[in-house]
Length: 261
Image 1 (cartoon, helix red, strand yellow):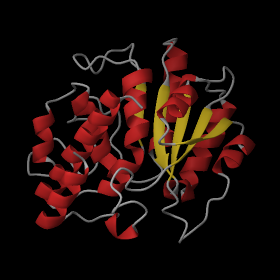
Image 2 (cartoon, rainbow, N blue to C red; image 1 turned 90 degrees about the vertical axis):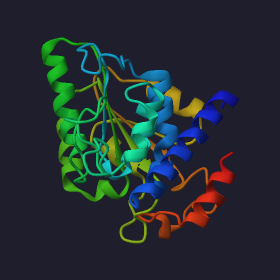
Image 3 (cartoon, rainbow, N blue to C red; image 1 turned 120 degrees about the horizontal axis):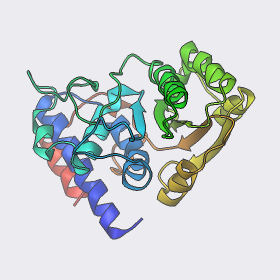
Image 4 (cartoon, rainbow, N blue to C red; image 1 turned 90 degrees about the horizontal axis):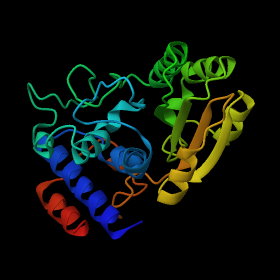
């Protein structure tokens, strides 16, 4: 990763921490888990225009694990969809930036998500619609490993393979946070069995992420199973279940921000 990229990521991590602390709300560790994936997608792969976020010739990205919205907001702000200062109003009354993303309020958000298992089905529909209309653009969605417990994920995986949706890519944030409830095992093998072109990568290796996102199969959808660390980037948060849905105290915030300088 370049020094510039590292600075951008730490700037976004600080914005996420400060927004959650000010709101008293937010899934910080989940946002950190996916931040590298989001950044590489928006910085190096996706085609979009922040000045015209609904342009028909854009690629589509659906954050299916909507509770990690702070990660998406930070990246969208960094890319100019809205001022970074909007993060200061996260989860406040009349703020467009809610705990889960709302496509009617936030520029760059393609689908309102949060109820787990819905993003991949919507992405399948988007990819099929684009193909029917002859629009040669790609659709990406990011789901969580715990979300893969939902039957709708596998129903839509079957449908995507049935329609040979080569313009569809599903990224799985495999941070193993669901292991205590249900171990998912080899998720890439499961997608392969459902007719997808599947690969497993390190979800914090930017070159590996870029290479995986850049590939697509013409006759089938693509699944990228990205092994990640929940809370990545802040050592005291990493793989610590207590941070799933809590915000730092004033003293903790000061310490965490210092770590990210």
